[in-house]
Image 1 (tube, helix red, strand yellow):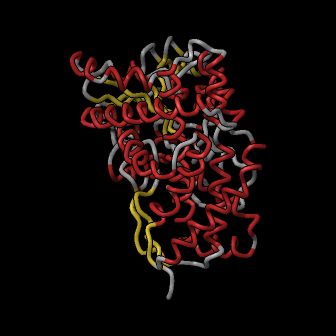
Image 2 (image 1 turned 45 degrees about the vertical axis):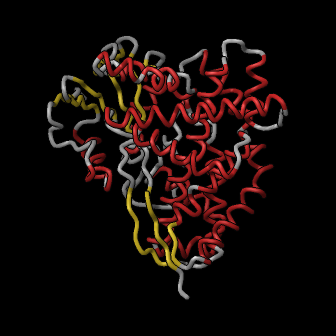
Length: 408
C-alpha cells in the first residue's frame, strides 16, 4: 500500500488528548486506510507504521536505528541543542537507545540478571510485598491504587536489585515523571529543561550509590553491571550511571502502567472478575490481554540510517519512524475481534515488549509483578471504581489515578 502524505493529519489523530483517551479509533482507521502514514508538522516529517507484520520486519532491519536521541534533538535551534547536550549525551548511553554491538553486550548482562530463574526465585518476596500493599489499600477504604500499589510494588522490586533505599523512591518517582513526560511527548521543547534536571539528579544519585557498591559488592543487578564494567573499559562510570537511571526508570514506569490498566479491566468487566475469582490460573491471561489491548508502551521511535524498502514503500535516510505497537496489537490480520477484550485468546502475539534484538529483557519480571498484584487484590474481594484518569502521554499508556472504594 502506498505511503499517504499529509500536512494536517488528514483526519488521522495521533497526538491529541482525544487520541490518548481512546487510541483504538485512530488505530483502526490507520490500519484500514493508512498503515504507512507520513505526518508532516512544522517542516518535520514523522512516519507512522501500524501493521503487525510491517513493524516486525522493521524491528529486525539493521538500518533502522535505536540511536535516535541526537537525531531527534537536531530539530531544535543550535543554541537549545547546546543547552540540552547533557540530556542528549546521557540518554544516548541508555541501552534502549543503542545499536549493536554496544547494545548487545550490555543487554546480555541485564537479561541474565532478569532471567526467568531469577524471577522465580524472587516470586515469594514479590508476592509478599504485593499482599502487604494491597491490604493497606483496602484498609484505607478509599484509595488511589496507582499511588499505593501500582507504583510502589515495581519500584521497590527494581530498587532492591539496584541497591536503592526505599526512602529514596519518592525522589526517584519525581525524577522519573519528568523523564516520562518528555519521552512520551510529541517532542515538546518545554519539557526538555525539567527532564534534563531530573536525569542529572538521577545520574548524581547513582554516582554516589556506585561508590557504596564498589566498597561492598552485592549479588544483584548493580553487582552484575559493576562486574561487566571491570572487564569493559569503554563502559565508563558515566555510561554506567546513565544505564542505572534508565533501568530504574524502565523497571517501574511501564510495570506501574501495566498493573493499573489490568486492575481497571478486572474491575470494570464483571465477566473477567468472575472468571478470575473462580480460576486464579487465568490471571496471567488477564495480564497478557492487557499488554495487547492497553499496552504500557504504545509506540517506539527509530531513525533510518540508510534507504529502506519494505514492499512498495521506501523510507529515506534520516527519516523518523514511529512503530505504533498499540495499532499492531489490534491488527485484524493477526487478532480475531481485535477490539474486544478477551482473556481466552491463544498464545499472545502482541508486540508490546518489542521484537527481535530489542525485546524487553525485563518482560518476565514485569508480568510476574502484575500477576502478584492482581492475585493480592483478588484476595480482597471486588471494590467499586470511583474514578480514573489516563495520563496525557503519547508513548507510555497508563492511568494517572485509579480510585477504588471498598464497602464498609
